[in-house]
Length: 145
Image 1 (cartoon, rainbow, N blue to C red):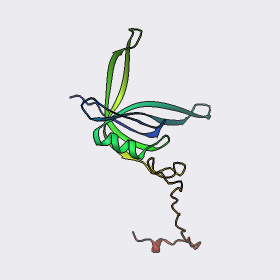
Image 2 (cartoon, rainbow, N blue to C red; image 1 turned 180 degrees about the horizontal axis):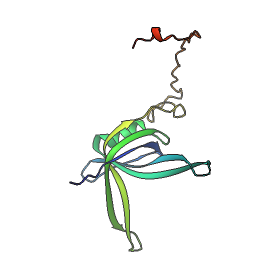
Image 3 (cartoon, rainbow, N blue to C red; image 1 turned 135 degrees about the vertical axis):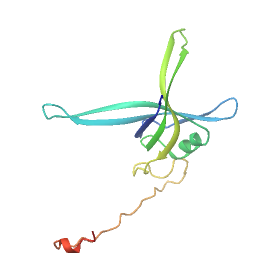
Image 4 (cartoon, one colour; image 1 turned 180 degrees about the vertical axis):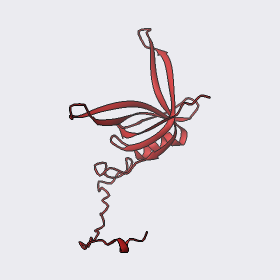
């Protein structure tokens, strides 16, 4: 049995670029950054970023183009694909991409303001609800379980 499955959750490194094939199908390419944080043996915090090239087709490409910009968060489920081509100097080149099969848009970042194609200058601000926290001690008999 073989399995080629990838899940990544990260942020777009640049605005995605929508194109249309000669057959009329939409295709979009973009890069996602994922971060890894760990503590080394000496106790120092370490951080590393990894960059992933992603390709999405059809309606998914159109949705990504409509709603996402640089810095937007997205979850991608897909498969790895390596393709080969020749550059202008005749050198063989390879690249490995994630072909998007499913996606989930992340929460809209506060710095992104309105949606990408919204021409208004006002940004949408959601108010956070206030939660009144009683400072009384919680007793075990008050717990519902």
